[in-house]
Length: 489
Image (cartoon, rainbow, N blue to C red):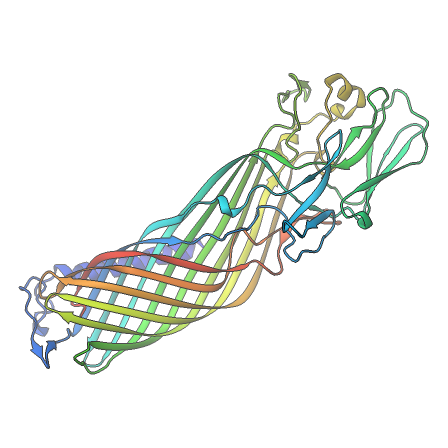
């Protein structure tokens, strides 16, 4: 990606340099009758202004808005409506849920963060174009870039659903005379049940945790306060604060052949065809923060708990997840441009159709549970828990510290698109004009960063992954442009 951006920067410098030469030079093209600072005067024929010929250039600023996707949750959401793993589906509300244990009761937890909370994604960029027209034939090379379009949001007390594939797993906590098994029962869609193998209560024992299956988002709880006995149950996934940032980098390079039709009283018509290379790089960053127990700190040297306990801890705090979808599109394109000149004013309308081959590079990486890096195993002793009057809200997967993930894959798609431009140009001199207008582009089958992640913990212990389908969306860009043209119409 670094080399691509560097090549883009070099191309922009070249196009801008050529355009400046066209604007500032008064003698180089004099033999062709090109005098940038000559007073405005157009030769007339057939009732209309004679069209310019020779080398031309355009340099513009562009301000574009990228329409965000709506109704996409940050978390697991089985859009097919079928439950999967430990996740259920509410058909009336159209949302996924997970049954979790709070220490007192089983509650239903859903996703509370979605792209509906994101604001407008917009940014400023530059566009440059150079070309040459001789008679009816012409060519042009141009492009634009808008880097760093972004939008952020902060959500306090955020909850999340992650599909913990526990339906094939059995977890056990054993003591001297006790063996408790808790497992997910797919027949009840989201409930757990316990089987007490031996009911004789042990005395004076620590609690070794021996999962028979993958690591998971389950933790253990005291079954009764007056005895040292525990049970496993699914943990709620909470963040005291969740910050979500989406960013889009977009740039284009065009190469076109243009054919100028014979002028008419209704205006001038140009038809063109060529190729476009385009990138739309869409990313979503998630940062979930919060302490394992509210009001409780962990001594970084001893790992002991300090302070007064209150509330439910943040199970996966801190978590830093980054999901990115790069769309590399090579698109043959055809289109047309109509323009009409009246005195100093020229109005033009342009449309293009793109048939794009899209290579999508999908990547997800991050870490979760960084608060558990320095956790002392002694806090899992049942007596320590009772002394502090708190449940150890620690997933089995994080007992030995934070974990990380890193996934990538390539996908191919057909991405058609349509682009429309409407511009007005006012001639300052015979060659130099001021240009301004509006533009919009729609492209289908674009991979989006907020849709590529699979919020699942698999039976092999893999945390998260990349979706195999359903991660594409249409992209809509629209905005305004303004700048300078030289010998353009």
